[in-house]
Image (cartoon, rainbow, N blue to C red; front, top):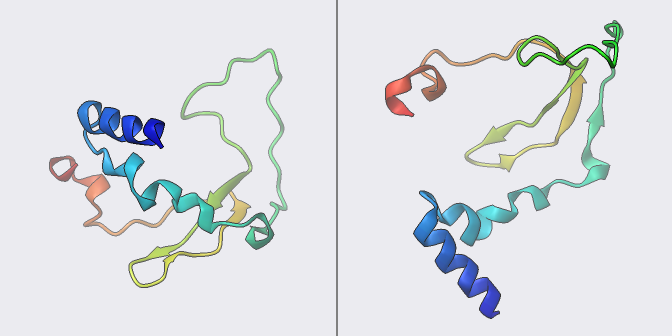
Length: 101
């Protein structure tokens, strides 16, 4: 118990958003169960890069991606691994507006 309290004190002093580590949100991933994971494999896998070639950030991608829907009413939905594809973002998404970050 003392270690947990010390961890919370440390987090409050050093982190800009300590509630991420100290509250129930820390365990958000515990809502997912492996049995709930849906798999949709690609029909057109890309050639794997040679192991001797360097992996370049933003240029080398996997054939699949993890997607999980979220809503403010239901929270996190069922996780799924699906073929790599484009993401759909609303034009007002805060990730597109640096002044809101």
